[in-house]
Length: 251
Figure 1: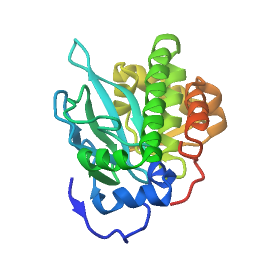
Figure 2: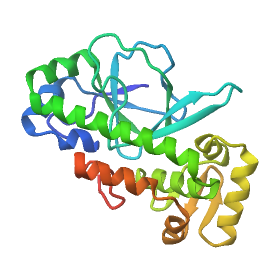
Figure 3: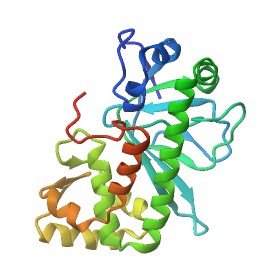
């Protein structure tokens, strides 16, 4: 992931978790933040890797957590965008990665060594509290995803994942998501996903272009979705209000 050095000192990156910090807490970590550009499928961590860096997706950047199944398929569990961070959120010292963590949608990131973040948290109770609260929100996403996979239909889950991706991008209704990527998110074969997409297209809810999905009727898509996204948003609002992405949020 190539680094960049063009960020104006004191300027907040377009990451809601970093923008949630008060000025004093941001000043503790700001000198150690490094910008980086990402590309689709960039690997941040493999299982067993020592987690040495915290990555903050910015703007439309999106990261996925992937767990390998016994049949060799990777199943995505949660998506992390500008509402959060990846790697070493509440750790101290050595921490091996459990899942494969990859870049889903390309874009800017900022990163900081875990040791630098831990040192800053040791100086500020409010900074430590913010990251502990974010860890709680991430755990809520995992719980909700587990329940969703167990009880909701493929149609509901397809709509949910598309909405989740849409809320974290700036594409004005265009989501850079292929049928293959969507199948991985759902943990099903590509043929299942294609049939669902064809149904949504026939209803006028979606269109597809090469490498992307266009949302033509967001209301209909939300009506098709389960309410898992809303449950996660509700928890974010209780624990870290203003951090979960707002589709109308500007850079």
